[in-house]
Amino acid sequence: SWAADRVALVGRAPHSSLSTLEGAWAGGSRFVMGACDCRTFNVRRLILVRVYFNMGRCMSRRYSHRDIRVEETGLIWPELLAIDTNTAVVSDTSGFLRRVDIETGTMVKSPCTRLPKIPTGNQLRSPAADNEGQIIAAATRSGWGCIWDWQTNDLEQLHPTYGGPVNSVALSPGGGYLALGTGFYPLNPSHRVAAKVEIWSRDPSWTFEEVVALPGVCVDWLAWFEESPVLVAATGRRAQNGGNLTFLDMSSLKAERAAEISAWPFEVCGAEDYDPVVAVAGDGLHIYRMDGPDGDESFNVEHDLRGACWADGRVVTVSGQILNYESNVVIDQLAPLGNCVQIVPRPGGGFVGISSEGIMRIWEDD
Image (cartoon, rainbow, N blue to C red):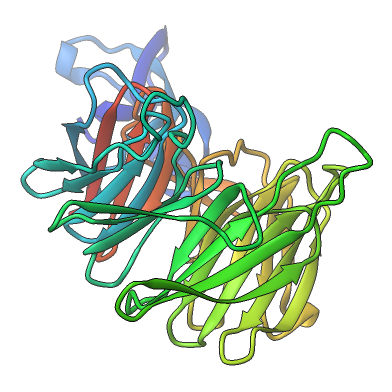
């Protein structure tokens, strides 16, 4: 019973002692063949034991979990935002934003973001919110971005001054400013396309303020940092063989730093304000710091990082594996969520995931 959850009986052998097996276990062996005295069965025979000391195969006892049904019919290309400990937002291709109360499981759905009788403007992505979680924004991958005040249920469309489509958005922490990331990947080599970020202000209605052009053709990701204050944009190249990461000083909209991303495809899997620092998943894990390339790091992570999150010096994959990315070792295993497509840190501790089956799972740090 000392390790009943990790012991399997696979054979028999002459009598020996338990010390060999206990020593191997204490030494942290991953796979151990040892011997134990099976007197509890009133026989003097040895039983060969294979011990699985593999954290990746054992469910974490640190995290409990519970599920919330977000959509009965499933979700197509859902994206997830955890605003605070008790609030999350889900976007997908339905044309609706969903604000979920994690504690009670209740949900508020926005008005439809697409135009009447026109099948466009429904592919919502890049959900963003202010610190209070009252104002929620999303990109539509069409000619506008949308702003939803969930308390009044008012939905407003913002059409970029310099043209769309809008592929990403970011709200300032106070909710007074909105960044629209525009551009697209042209199939025709004669099309001249530039990635741009437009800044809009709310005083009292949303008004265009200024625009900045960035390297590449499409702004795929935006984040607005509060303490810096810095706006970070990830853009893709026309040839779709890499991209750029640009740190913009929000007082001047000048680039504090521009870094090349060599991986393709790539996705941003985490960002932290205090440095500021951004983690990009592609051919491994790449960490970029605004201070300069001397602080950048790259790690050869031999796991699928699509939909994964980077937080607190760890990577968590959609299969529930918690990785030490420096050593490329699985250090813990969350209870897996079937068909999970994205997992994000939950402010205050734990994680939140969303599946294509329409289920949100909350892993709580016990």
